Length: 254
Image (cartoon, rainbow, N blue to C red):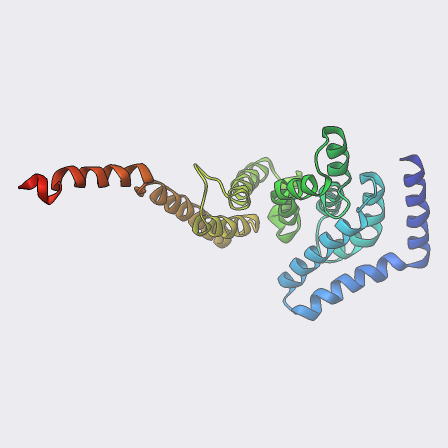
């Protein structure tokens, strides 16, 4: 750990002295601007590119070293687009932590499989599956100014309502990814949960209305499908035996 952090310090110094960090930040922004000229879309694409960059930089690297390196490379891009420094730092730290469960290295999954005797690849993908909601939560910090309230960059009321809305978004995303609400969920309600999670994490009035509507509709669809009677094999055999007893053979009726 000490040697890795020392190496990270050398890397950070080199990136700072050569100006490579600013160059990479400009590449992230220009890549987003190549896809769209709308400022909101540019911010969204930049955040997505930054999330991928931090995840890659954190592969097989401890969290502390990953955060230090990523802050020099990705931090200027987010800050130049108007993201508060605290939100940008938490964004980078979040993905630095999540790199520990990101394939193909996933150090946390490798360590846990070694301790429990489980299969490494299966444990790695299962850990990534369970962490899917966490991969989208940091985007809420940066997409909108209201998202900064999630990292205590606003009043108490703002922190409370953004926290509640984000909790519903995480619950919807977990239901969609895990495929379970009250019982095993089908794809119709899972798709609605994914839509609800994405809309709620944007933390804007219109998107939140769409998100809550999609979430409520998904729950209603799930409850309706759950109440739908199913014709089991036991029921089918009971119906068949009842029909045979009621009709009987032609000889018995004579």
